Length: 93
Image 1 (cartoon, rainbow, N blue to C red):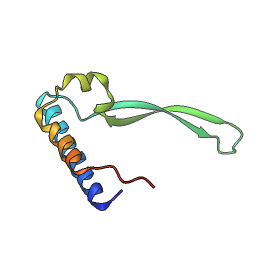
Image 2 (image 1 turned 90 degrees about the horizontal axis):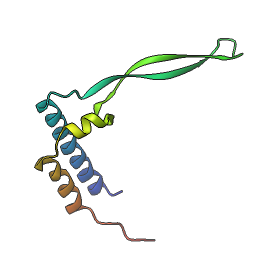
Image 3 (image 1 turned 60 degrees about the vertical axis):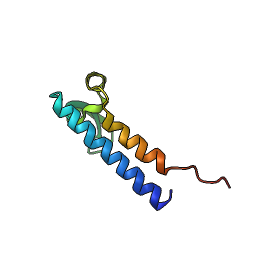
């Protein structure tokens, strides 16, 4: 990936991130949610293992109810247009 493309892609991703955080806030939705994941740990003597649930925080954008609750706005199209207008496929080998 060229430096120019990397920079444009980074700017587009940051614009999209800022837009999503603003829309979540405007609708009173969280940017992260509590979750649990399974943690599997070897016994000290390595003769077996134990498992336990661990509390973690994760992005609310992985929760379908949050994704569908926030309508798209014109701002998010900025990220798509900024990236699309500067991107062109690299020539083949």
